[in-house]
Length: 128
Image 1 (cartoon, rainbow, N blue to C red):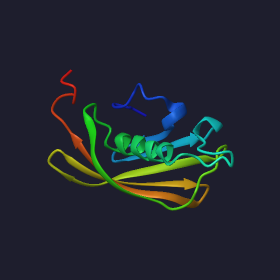
Image 2 (image 1 turned 45 degrees about the vertical axis):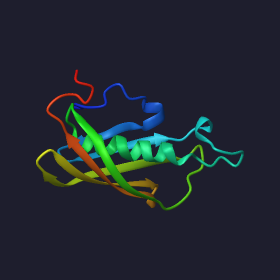
Image 3 (image 1 turned 180 degrees about the vertical axis):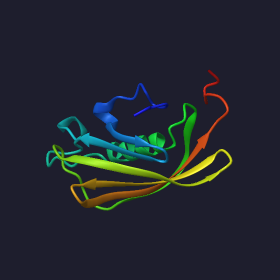
Image 4 (image 1 turned 90 degrees about the vertical axis):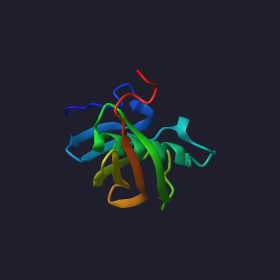
């Protein structure tokens, strides 16, 4: 796997890349008690979104890729202690814009789906 983007991301929070190929990425995340929103162990949706976003960025896999927008759906709750996996695919490319679809699964059960509008910039978004 030749990872070109998001190299410093905290994998404990946003997942570990399992596969990165042209226009595709698969990232896994083991949810922890630190991600719980309540005593029942419901995982905060931000961690699920972060996993899907990480996979989307890796599917584009360019050093200057940024997220411009998204349209997402949370389909099922995730309990802490569960392992979830995001699969992301670039579905279209138009100039600097890449549209990526991402799905998150717990085993074979889909818990999240989304479309991510990513942009490949000429230079880093912070001008570096």
